[in-house]
Length: 138
Image (cartoon, rainbow, N blue to C red; front, side):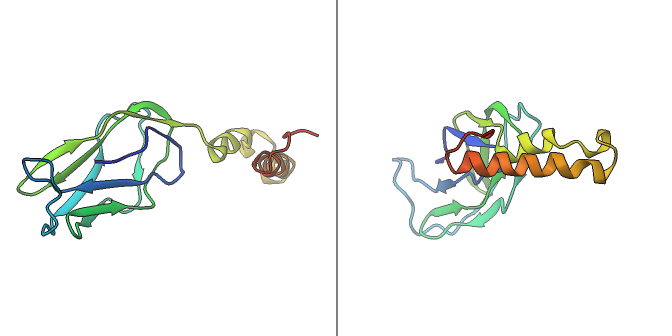
């Protein structure tokens, strides 16, 4: 199983799973169904995206997966009927821009939705500035 060593909460997490023989060679004739799930889940996150695929040429390439909460030491499990399962190496999920923004915009304590707009606008501007390599405040 190939997965990144680290990720950002909510960002794409590219994962691929190969069906291998006893010598570690890909079994290109395999059309096995692979199911991915979170194993160790230190951040109580949810694995989002398509988590079940059929291999093509012995490979299942999962695109568009993400873990929605930060944490240290997540693992993924891969299972398939009739085949030995696999567990990924541990990886970390860091807080992403979306998560920081959601924490910074608490409309409930800002006097309702009308009071939230200045905070939301400031958060979006800071995010846009960071993504363009500028200081969030200037």
